[in-house]
Every structure is written in structure tokens, then in C-alpha cells.
Image 1 (cartoon, rainbow, N blue to C red):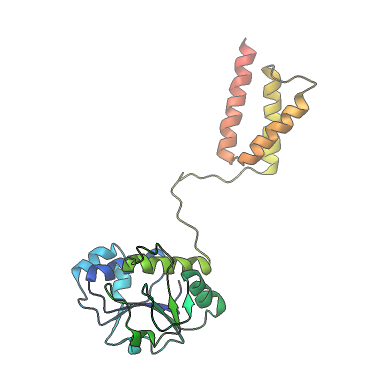
Image 2 (cartoon, rainbow, N blue to C red):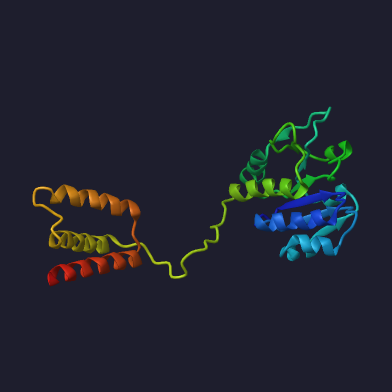
Length: 242
């Protein structure tokens, strides 16, 4: 989480976009949402689009003006897809994350996003220290509000060190085999190859070295090791019955 960073939406027209932003924020471990004069909020459509990020919506602070929303902030970054006649110091999302997270994580920061159709007005950008622009297709540069927020929040997540992703896999995931377990495995493998007549005295060393390289690259876990050694035992038993 980045409790010192707030995402501020100014004059949002469609409540569904507020919900989508809340979802994007929660995806990226962000929780502070501020709304400046939203057209419609609260709204069932916002809750539906939040899709599980209801806590972010419920905690959203609502302000009548941008000045009030950023009153406690020491750094304000305004996002805009439009080119302006007046130049504000520009930042990319990655530079924004470095400035916000890496340079001084103790500052209270607002990252401000404007209206869906027209963005931030110049007098609102006057309140910002930097202008944030997301690099994209110059011929189609208008991003959906939630998509723009997600890009910025993603960079913040990476800059502060992303948490381990949830991995969907084997519930019985096993630890990797230890060096000692691998040595016992290689002994068993060597014995099995001898029993089935695969190894020859003059080539056994080079073959075993290559097999070691194969299995070392694979990094077997203990369950995989047990499976392979079970195969070796069966191979040896079948060979003995002949």
C-alpha cells in the first residue's frame, strides 16, 4: 500500500468510471480515492463496476473543489492527454513513480485525473507541480479513465516493490530437492542405467555429467524426485525378472 498517495478524480461524469477506477486501484494495492464534484455518486453502477473494490469506494473522500482535495498534499501531479500552450514540467508514469516513491516517500502526494471528455482545466493544472503524460499511440491518445489510473498505479506498485503474485498451481507444492537428495538420486540413476545396460565403462562419466546438467537445470522438487526414483526401482525390478 501507498497511504501517502491519493488518486484524485475531478468532475467525473460517469459513475461507472469511478467504480472501474476503484477496481484498478485495488488491483495495484492503492486505496486512497478522492472525488472532486462527481456528477453522480454514490451510485449502484459505480459499485457494480468496482467488482469487489467496494471498500475503496466506501472510503472515498468527496470534495467540492480540487483545492480542498489537495490541501494536505506537498506534491501534486496532474494527468493530461492534451498538449497545452503553457508548459508544465512533464513526467512519464515511470518518472512519476520514481519521484513519488523513490525520491521521498514521506510526502503527501495527489495524482489528479480530469474529466473524461476534457481533462483538467488550466486553472486546475495551475495547482499542480508536474504534468503527467502516458506515452501511447499519437493518433489515438485518449485513454479510458480507469486504464490511465491503472497504468500509473502499476508503476507505483513496481517502484515500491510489487508483492508476490498469487500463483494458481499445485496445492501440494513441494520444496526443491536438497543437494544431498540429488546426490542420492544420481547414484540411483547411475545404478539403473547400469542395470538396463545403457552405460558403458568408457562413457559413463561423460554421460552422467551431461545428465547432471539436465537435472540441475530442471531443479527437481522432492515429489518429482520420488516419481523418478519410483520409475528407476520399477525399471530395475523388471530387468531382474528377465
